[in-house]
Figure 1: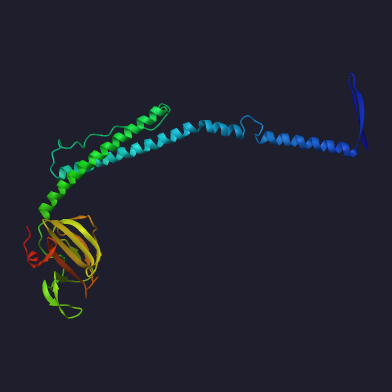
Figure 2 (figure 1 turned 30 degrees about the horizontal axis):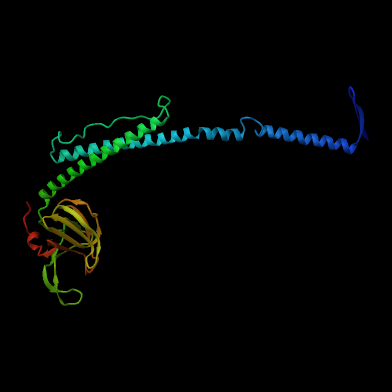
Amino acid sequence: MSLTLLYRGKNVRFSMQLTKLHWLSAVCAFALISGLVVHLIFTNKLQPDGDKYQVLSQVNQAPNKIKEQKITALTIKLAELQSQVLRLNALGDRLADSANIPTTEFNFNQLPASGGPVSEAFPINDKTLEQLFIEIDDFESKINYEEKQLQMLESLSFGHHIQNNGYLSGRPIAKGWLSSYYGVRKDPFNGKPTMHKGVDFAGKEDTAIIATASGVVTWASKRYGYGNLVEINHGEGLTTRYGHNKNLLVSVGDVVNKGQKIARMGSTGRSTGPHVHYEILRNNRQIDPIKFVYRKGK
């Protein structure tokens, strides 16, 4: 089987005879080219809004998107600072009230300036970013100033608190009995005479250990010989220690009240049974606690 192609033009005329192999090859080539063109069209390779054009469009829009993200982040940060200022104001009011400070002395009632989220009416430009940075700087300055005010109030309130409740008296336990006095005694481990620089109160395990005066916790951890130890500074050179506890209920830096539970009785450290080893130090030297134990409270 063969196919004859005849072309007749104005000045040119020719004919060509194609075998079956020739015209089948031509049809396959045409089909292959047509399929490739259709594939390119449907994969947007030849369309003006294809991947290349979309990437270029994203690159052109990137600065605005980055700027919008920055403004959104700054706006969220500004809202957080506003909330922090409101919390500081509430804390300042409570501290001032507890310390009997006149309301005219500290201005905690002033509300922070208000802001809002970015919208269509809020243009995205360099001025917007600059204004947000200025507002955030203002808020940070205000917060730092109020923190200093609160530190002053806290110091004043703490000073009043220690002065009124720092009177050392009473026993460091809720229940139990005095089992060993201050002074030279036979060491329970080796039997030799040894100086005992505190008094011991025995009781049941987990009995509450209480602070004998208000103060600041300066140690709340293990210490050699003492086991789990709590140390409290009461001001005016006085410190108390509570040793051999099973577990501790306070941390370093805590302000504790007279009679507050600070630990649970145990037998940690160099101990023969559940008890609390109670020491009183004046200017870093142990003194006999017994007169403070039987001292009448104010």
